[in-house]
Amino acid sequence: MSTIFAKRMETLGTETAFEVLAKAKALEKQGKDIVHLEIGEPDFDTPKNIKEAAVKALYEGYTHYVPSAGIPELREAIAEYISKTRRIKVEPEEVVVTPGAKPIMFFAILACVNPGEEVLYPNPGFPIYESVINFVGAKPVPIPLLEENDFRMDHEYLKKKITKNTKMIIINSPENPTGGVLTKEDLKVIADCISNRDDVLVLSDEIYSRIIYEGEHESIASLPRMKEKTIILDGFSKTYAMTGWRLGYGVMRKDISQKIAQLMINSNSCTCTFIQMAGIEALKGPQNEVEKMVAEFRKRREVIVSGLNKIKGITCKKPRGAFYVFPNIKGTEMDCRQLGDYLLNEAGVAVLPGTSFGKYGEGYLRLSFANSIENIKKALDRISKALEKR
Image (cartoon, rainbow, N blue to C red):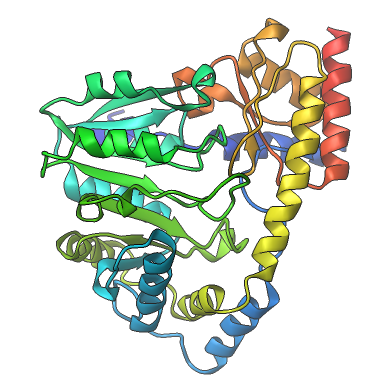
């Protein structure tokens, strides 16, 4: 029987986190106790003031269509926030609000990259980058993020990979899955490489910009002449524990924002109206809950890094941002998928194999420390005992 699916569907990838979660949930149904370190979402509740703002907006009638690029009040709030935090002047017309930040990834590549053109992206990195690059028929060019370089881009390697066919460079800092953070020097190297190229854009995924443990977040858009070359991707999911609310945005030149808004018209019409009102409260309201969450993540980081480094066969660098560790498991003499399956089935600990984030993730696991210290300690004990049994 002939297939009904378009050929392009064969190029579309997925997120292994949800597959591992499904396996873990199936084991829980069988009565097995599982510690979840696989899913990348804060385990905190959305702050009360944000929830109250959404409920208030519902009862005030914010339940209808609004402009596809977002309600003016939220676009203004985002422009003000990005202007302040990135030290650049942003106009509301340069902001597009989307249902979650992920559509900015999809729309930016779809709107700006032609089939056959090259897109440089971090590897290991968020798997949807490569998935969308392939989907639009472009050529994915992985830039390895190696442990010996603190999971940052190698400058000379990057320079060699930029060609006349390069159309976009994707960066993510703080980074998923490694917790690595690009320095100002790293960003300057990227900027210098494309300073004379009006045809190359940077998609800067800054979704973890508020979850950083040393220093301050640096955005490539803040560098001279880079604002017009940069599409900033950010949102509310990680900072405000709003993953299920689906509220994100992109900041970009007006000509690009018009194209992204056009894609919104053709796909989603608009982002949920009362949720956008909650987004205004998130940005303009008190930030103490965010600060408390990051302080707690910092404590958990110490526990999980220290604990992993005590387990034979595992070494772990301390991440500078996000809420993930990316331990080296080569000393266990198992590949990352084998070890991931073993820990799930034998130890009751759900983790992700490094290759879920690209081929350069072999030899590593990703563990999310968006879980309680009690559960993190339980997971570490189980991992240690399971490896001792082998």
